[in-house]
Length: 272
Image 1 (tube, rainbow, N blue to C red):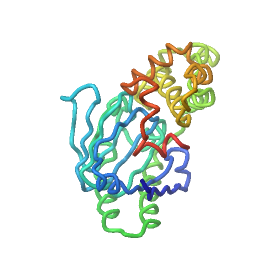
Image 2 (tube, rainbow, N blue to C red; image 1 turned 120 degrees about the vertical axis):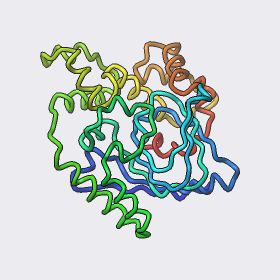
Image 3 (spheres, rainbow, N blue to C red; image 1 turned 90 degrees about the vertical axis):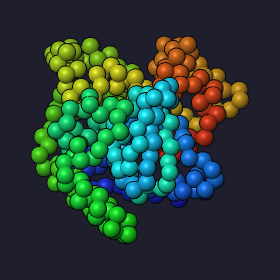
Image 4 (cartoon, helix red, strand yellow; image 1 turned 45 degrees about the vertical axis):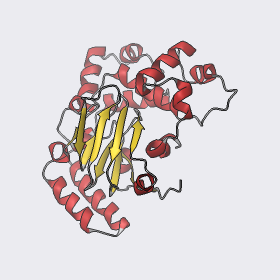
């Protein structure tokens, strides 16, 4: 299926917190009769602007669902089934550790949630939304987004401890001992956990699992003779059984079944 995916980078210092602004032709899926997609934890936070309904449902629980339009999709730790009824205008892909500078909300309240943008960013986000829908020029839309988040960022002050731990987790692709890292800088593990829950929404140990999963899922579709033990070893899992258990936990599927799937609306995240 042809893709009209477009990705725009942001400037003005926002690139440390926002990965990109993107657009895609979801209508091409809808025209082909596809409107429901498996979405797995992908180490992103998405601020979606759309006038069309989107249903997000926990894959393992038919009762756990919500229908939203423009919304913030918090960091995911569970697989979801996302059902589209129309195209989206655009989405701001925020780094999971990049949301806290723009909101006073404790981020443990955003995990696996689809939230009203106004509850996260205040009433000003409604003006941005209206401006984006009234603007047809893509580059001007990006400038509107940059202006909004730049103003929000003025209040931000760096947290060297949080930034240090995030940098180490990413550098080691989630394969790091948080207790040992805490001791190396003489900060208690409990203190680090409190900081992470407020600024990320997860404990550092749980976030390490998400990061490790993300890098494991980034591999190209394995060939028939591929051994999953190689992925397990390369990504720091204890063994193949541990790898299979983690994939099942976060995707609801065996690795063999998951890697056969078309990544559909997540393919550009996992191909970077």
